Length: 443
Image 1 (cartoon, rainbow, N blue to C red):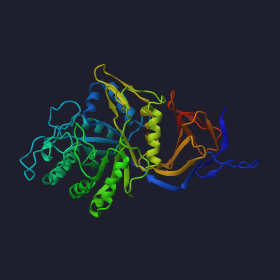
Image 2 (tube, rainbow, N blue to C red):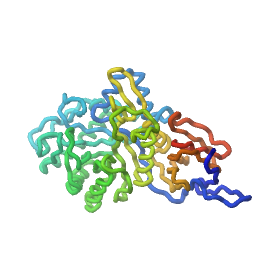
Image 3 (cartoon, rainbow, N blue to C red):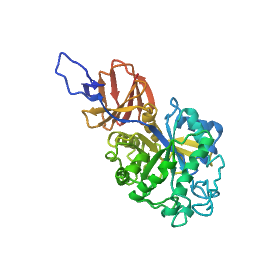
């Protein structure tokens, strides 16, 4: 049986039942209460993952690119995060080529930049993304070149030497100029990735105060680009970096976007800033490739849908960027790229993200929304073209019926058997299937 055939309030309008007392609405959307503006949804393909895609046939490459960026066939992603390399050319897989691999002779010496026009195939994917309509390109550095750091290596943490701060800022800006030469405008520029985590791969430490200090060096030389900080490895940990920048008027002037990851802690509240905030990297733990929608593993599609919902509604994030778009082996990326068998596989994680990214477009605003049933996780958005998008994740085990949907609407179902399967809304009624994500688009 359907659980609770109930009246709703959609877009703030109550469904009237004159012959009986009105029941509490299943869902209420109030357009008069607005929250954050949306910048978009995205992926990263840093650390040479694009080379895996290039190993496939041209037909398969196009199919994967469609899955990422096409608004009819795939997710319609609108942000691409690029990795700024720090390792010398010829490094093994998982490292990125630097635009200045060798010390030019000291921090005050003229720089000796090199550019191959390829950047580990990131230029190719960026150009493809642009052709699909992507306009937001976020370039992020995991580390400065090793000779700029106190440990002499781009790996294993270490800190930026004070005398190299301006040279490092110039190095980052030079990277954006090389991309401009290729026809790609870097819109957002980050100088640190997980500054509170020492990794065996490219990594570099900053305290919150050091990050605020460096933002004041980078800001004045990065004209026309948003300075982004600080990609902490946990959302709660990111709050200290945001607070340090907000406490320094000059640093606050330059940092336009505050970022955090959700490995150490999930999104549970907004970052302490009135600026935009992005969940800029996460994928779930696990040791196997998993294509399931709902298997309780935490790496299934429904877990991703819940994480995106929480980031948007609890954290007021303006962007959600998944790690990674595609990778190999036991990856928890959206797509598995097999460069040996020359094939690829698609997980339900992709469709969980696509349910949001395809329909909630850059420039949208989140509207206030709530559900009477705590099993329904609801969020609502108004796009710049006037269309409304209502996302309902039914975490319960029984279906729920909405009655009173107003306007020309289509419902898209994502669950074990469906991946954004569309059906027109007839009779102003939508059935929200159990353990499923229903995206309702009202034109």
